[in-house]
Length: 275
Image 1 (cartoon, rainbow, N blue to C red):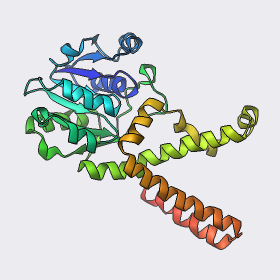
Image 2: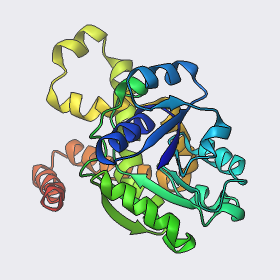
Image 3: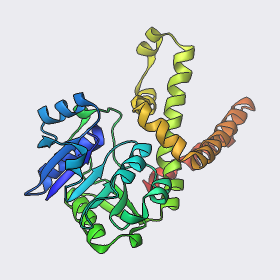
């Protein structure tokens, strides 16, 4: 099987490594507009060769591991692929991508969101087990030809992923609360501290809690600004929900209402019984 990966950063590079590790007889062709990413991906053996976009279009499977707007643009450039070619995207939002996929290749296109990632980005951040034992959401598979949905399922199962099925709109709302809003909170936390504290104080006092919560603020600004804007309605809804909870905490502290504070925190503790 010949797999073309468009985008050779963390997600695409890790996908290449994972395929090499988990599947036999796979040739991986990489493409990235960033020439440095191409040379790094080759040097790190994330891919077998660098190809042109036209060469990518000749592959059996095409994986789009680029920002959401780039995925939509790429789909329109793939309208002339063979009927047997499977296209899989790894974008963090789904509804707009599915909606704007050209009808001619809609049956080829499998909308996927692997719930995996790191705060680091670029080819050097790629790791072979990024996807192992993680969830991947596949959306609107009823719109795919069976050859393409089956092939995508085979690949993700080979990578050791747990598959969940959803409608694209349902996915985007859930992702706003579980993934997108926490990133917004982490970026906000980092900025609020940077505006109030000098770097020496941050270095001296920052402990586990702050480091854990601010870790994902190191994530790619290009990728996450794209995600926030693509899923803006749901992200705004999630941020407003978080603001409501933060306002509750502020008011309880102002009133020195210890009983209410403890009850509020105990309610939050229940989350980890689910997780």
